[in-house]
Each structure stands twice: as C-alpha cells, then as structure tokens.
Amino acid sequence: MTDAFVQIVDVSKTFGGDRNMAEHVHVIDDVSMTIGTGEFMVYLGPSGCGKTTLMRIVGGLETKSEGQVLLGGEPVTGPDRRKGMVFQAYTSFPWLTVFENVKFGTKYRTDVSGAEKDDIARHYLELVGLTRFADFYVNRISGGMRQRVAIARTLAAGPEILLMDEPFGALDAQTREYLQVELRRISRIENKTVIFVTHDVEEALFLADRIVIFSSRPARIVEEVDVKGILPEERDADTKETEIFFRLRNHVRDVMRAQMRAEGMNA
Ligand SMILES: Nc1ncnc2c1ncn2[C@@H]1O[C@H](COP(=O)(O)OP(=O)(O)OP(=O)(O)O)[C@@H](O)[C@H]1O
Ligand SMILES: [Mg+2]
Image (cartoon, rainbow, N blue to C red; front, side):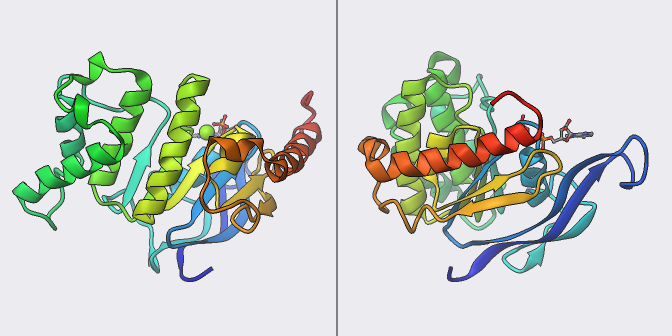
C-alpha cells in the first residue's frame, strides 16, 4: 500500500458507560487497520457486530471509547465535507429535481465558484448516467436512480473518502448488480478512498480491493482478504462467473459461517 489515508488504531467502543458496567454493550474490540488513498475497503461481518458503528466513528458521527482514528494524518473530531456518506435509505429531496439534488452537494463548498458548481453537478450526473433525467423530480424516478442521485450528490461535495453503509441493500437484484458495476467504475475513475459495508459476499468481492471480515459482537478482525491481488482490476458482470471468484466466494462464506456458528446462529 502506498500512503495510508485512514488510520484506525486500537479502537474500541462500548455503549452505555465503561465496559465494567452491567448495562454496557461492548461493540468494537481493539480494531486496527490502515486504508490507502484510493483503496476500496469492504467491511463484512455478522448482523449487529458493529460495522455501522465503526463506520460512524470514522465519519465522526459517533465517538470511540478508546483508540485513535486519523484521516490524512488528522484526528477525526466530527462530521464534515471531507467525509461523504451514503446510506441504505434514499436521502434525496423530493421537491428538487435530479439536477438540483446533485447540485445541493456543492452547497457548502467554498473552494469553487457558483458557475463551477453547475459544472460539477453536470459532471457527476453524467458519471452516474442520469443526464437525461436532470429535470425529473426525484419522486418520479426509480429507487436505483435515486441511489445514483445520492451517490452523485455525495461526490459533488468533493469528499476525500466515501463511507457507504449497505447503500444497495434496498434494491432489487438486477439494479444492485448494475450499480455495483457502476460504483466500481466510478471509484476507479475518481480514485476515491471508500469504506463500504455489506452483508452480501458477492457484492463485497466484486467491489473490494480488500475485505475485512469481522467477528460477531464485539467486532474483532477475523481475516483480511486481499482481493486486489487476486481478482483483475477491471471487473464486469462476468467476473462473478470466473473460477477464481467462486473459490474466493466459498472461502469468504466459510469464514462468515464460522463466525455465525460461533455466535450460536444456524448457518
Ligand atoms: N446508540 C447505541 N446505543 C446502544 N447500543 C447501540 C447503539 N448503536 C448501536 N448499538 C448496538 O451496537 C451493536 C452493533 O450495532 P451496529 O449497527 O454497528 O451493527 P452492524 O454490524 O452494522 O449490524 P447490521 O449488519 O445489522 O447493520 C448492536 O448490538 C446495536 O444494538
Ligand atoms: Mg449496520
């Protein structure tokens, strides 16, 4: 890895007081990792293990109990424009058009002029393939399109890192596959550092440069999978049909199942 953009050092999180209190929930246990600039990192792990919590800590939306999180060498102190977040629920403004929604992302930028903001909005609309729908109100477009609007708006804000928490979780299988291909392409073009949370092993493998698999709660790192070193850089829908992809998928599934068994779930 070249330069580490995200540094997570010995991070632990306990909700509800310190970890000796009866009502505490110990969610993250001593997690450390670095993520390189432009790297696509995927978090996989059993439901409720603490993935969202860790991502919210990186995004500055949640405090940590112990440890350090640095972005570009600086400690995270709260949310700001440097961190762009996309969630499962569609977060767009129904009373604005597609173009206006994307342009909204530039609203608080002070590094560009008003005219440049229009250009930026047009650029990201084009990148997500929605130029034709610029004047549609978002309540008139599909869920998959709305999620593309959310991604374009987030990118238009000029973030240094994209934090995506199951952004395709509410979409049908075809739309989901299509957006996986698009997101992989966009992340390469923009060389964005991404942390992406998903339950879906195939989605994780298809998108990732690297996968971190967490244990059930409290989340500890069980395994790291260097996908970049195994799958080709250029990926399309056919990548999922290759033998190496099957083998990787089976391996990751086995690790996930072992975690769920450890937790006493039927897997
Ligand atoms: N504000 C909070 N106060 C107390 N407990 C919380 C809080 N937020 C999350 N938790 C608990 O922390 C644990 C981890 O939650 P988190 O949402 O991070 O898991 P997750 O891995 O994202 O799960 P999922 O895959 O289902 O989205 C859960 O048991 C949850 O109930
Ligand atoms: Mg979650």
